[in-house]
Image 1 (cartoon, rainbow, N blue to C red):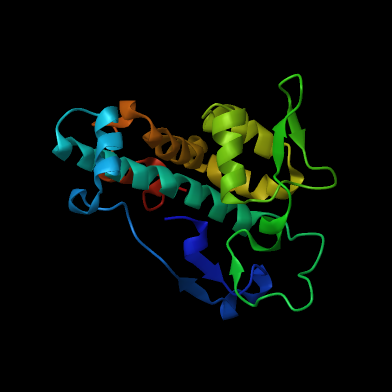
Image 2: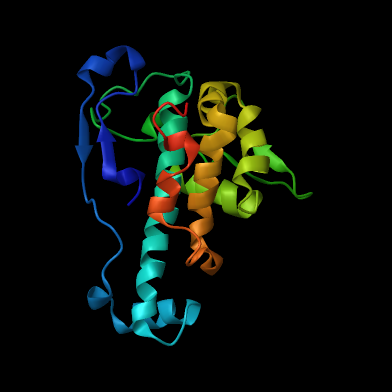
Length: 205
């Protein structure tokens, strides 16, 4: 489950009536019966000595991946249009990150530990780059440090405003999904529980 699962024909909001979406290689974490010995051993090291206890962990892996897919979709669809048009001869079906997905990583750390931005524009909403920012740069702090980082990017202002609705409920949802890569989330975070968040309720935004 990732951004490569979704292909869209355009990112231009003016062409929304002609938007085409293709879903490819769609799947969720494998069932316990399909795990090989190495995968089972790795999962068991995180939870317990009972092979059946890995099943809730597989669900968390899916929720963790879903968090980044949601984040990338919001940033890609609500950001300002790129400064440069697609190159001539580009494929008509683009990844969720679009042209920007092929750009250099959006940010990293300088020698002093500060965040370095790409000169001349916002960082591309590309899944691996977002994952690196959230986990390596901001230490999983989605609702605080990463949100503030996005707020300073003029092109991402509409996306930040969208996630800020219902007392920053969108950020809270993404934070809960991102946190699913930790074993502490076992038994605490469920897909059904996340659906109860106000941001996802009808009329909540």
